[in-house]
Image 1 (cartoon, helix red, strand yellow):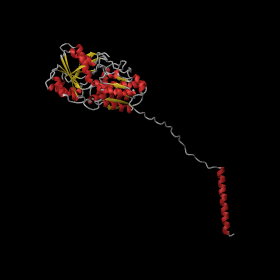
Image 2 (tube, helix red, strand yellow):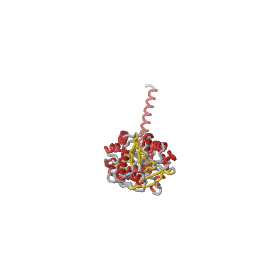
Image 3 (tube, helix red, strand yellow):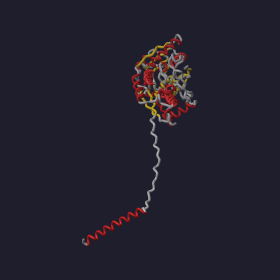
Image 4 (tube, one colour):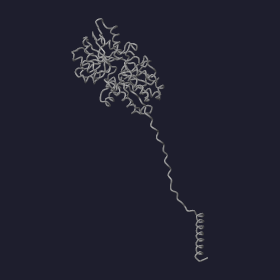
Length: 414
């Protein structure tokens, strides 16, 4: 063995001894280690998933000649919903309003009702005309959805109704009450001393119902020298009735009754009557002669009559509060249409709240109950056993000095 190899062996042995010694020291005195401080993870509670809003549907005129009336009614409905949302919503959930078009035929209202149900609305408010509202009601009855029918002038809403439907306008036919909105209107005409009444109206179920009630009352109660010369009809949904107005005026009435609705239709008809020289009194179909029509007619509106189920009375606290909120939101005073929309929303929401559920079957039995709120009429909303609203009177109004003023109130029986 050479010296170089011996020296390498010595170095190897020494290296092994050093490693053994180091391991021994580590075993006897382990090196102190300082653990990094730990911070407990914060306890977090997952935010609850937001609940879906409760959907309410409206089916009113969204298009056509009477769209302005639908707009006013929706304003009232929307105001009630805005107030409810500001107060915490319905069953603790936000309310969403979905608007559908009533149109000018049963087919359109049926399509809208089916769409509303498919969209999952918890209830519907709607129905401005008898031609469309009965078909809408029949669709709603198929599933028992809570339904508040508003301006519709058909007794079939409650006569052929179902649990869950209520009707919040005054009675309109003898089968509901002999003292209904149309019969008391005819009696008022007799009391005013008119001798010849001529009607001109849209060819709709409502105007034909009006004609039937007028015919009945005039035949039974008018004096022998009184004459009702009937109704001249023009197509439903059109804005021009000059030809029919001319025919009606040709019968020389002292009262021309115009059974129509929609701002342009009303304005055109009154203008036509005056332009062809008619100087007698004019009465516009119930509840459709509103401030926009008066403004558009200007001086031609002076003295024109109509009638309504409600007119703003600031001496009633609930009416004053409703008017203030409505005008602040929409820039105009409320009328009968906006009051109906507002009251419809209040009743629909109150029934759902009372049921504690949006289930149709749970809400339906509560639809014609009193729920403790006072309407803008200063009175609670009351119904008979069939779901027809009970009201005290029908109001005759007249355009005077650019404003619509009440001139008479005729008692009604529910």
